[in-house]
Image (cartoon, rainbow, N blue to C red):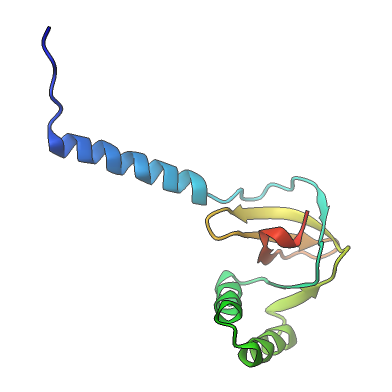
Length: 121
């Protein structure tokens, strides 16, 4: 009985490939699929632009309520973001599992808005 030894360099390559595959699978958005009409479950600010959404989330997580209010107001006024109310009908367009966000298109709108995954069902 002879055991085959896999070179360490090759093993590291397989591990890296496996990690990359898992990461790609977790972060790949479900692009362009309208799954079904869902409802927003709590009032939330949604942003068309991914970077604007991330900036809003970073400030919210920091706990600086004054900065959050200023940024949200600015983004709402310039149309980058919109307020979604509990009960609003939305269509799921994209999901980013790793970031915990989804992009939903409110009924009658042409653009989708990024919101936290737990804000709609």
